[in-house]
Image 1: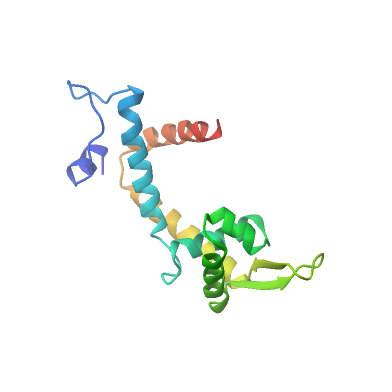
Image 2: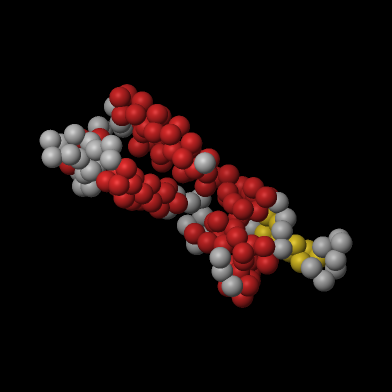
Length: 162
């Protein structure tokens, strides 16, 4: 499926000049790029190995897989939620068998949260599922469209690295 076919299938059209040529003006391109990026990210996040997990629970699991054991307070800061809200998230994850809590070796008053093998597997399976969804969508594009997205990917990586 080409970009043109996707646009006629209901996707919003990109900002263009009066002559229909895609614009390179940053002030016109930025809202379209922002919205397309947000919609793509939102759609990818819908792909989860465990449909019972909320997006917040999935994010906490992914954080623990990436960073390792941490405190509930650090997770609250990372997720921008209150400690009681994080505690509810952790309770649900513990009930599902995806995390374990243990006292810190250095300070027995402090609790550490870590991902279990089952939690790690759900994160890995979710990543695979998300990659497979995107791979199917990319395979439906023309080689020229995939080449354009490959170039755009490199540019977007530079944007966020600055």
